[in-house]
Image 1 (cartoon, rainbow, N blue to C red):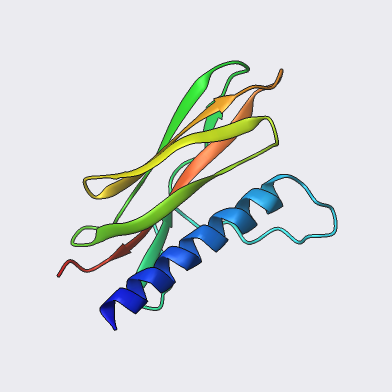
Image 2: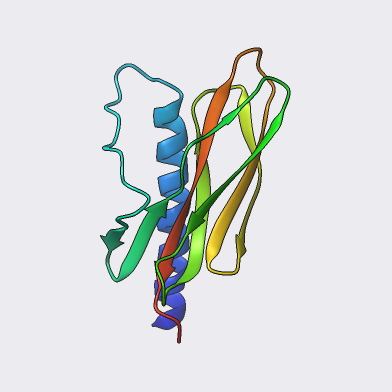
Length: 123
């Protein structure tokens, strides 16, 4: 049961990242999801979903964004979202009680990125 829950959570994280990425790319027929506060995580079936602050990345530069779990919670998944097609998430990983994403802006204008983390109580 626990393995199934972890696999289901990983699938949710992957889908959330794909939806966020597709939405960020500005398909006019797709409604944008509501913004979520980094300070007030969203409870997702026993998990908290927390977004980090948006980080502006200059053209040709690399950026880093971090989302932090609430006190007493641990990360079980995460990812990142970008503002456009020319900024790419290059790394996505857990670090302590947070999730880190790094990205590269290959475009000619500033773009933004931000990390999100799914957190739960430790075992």
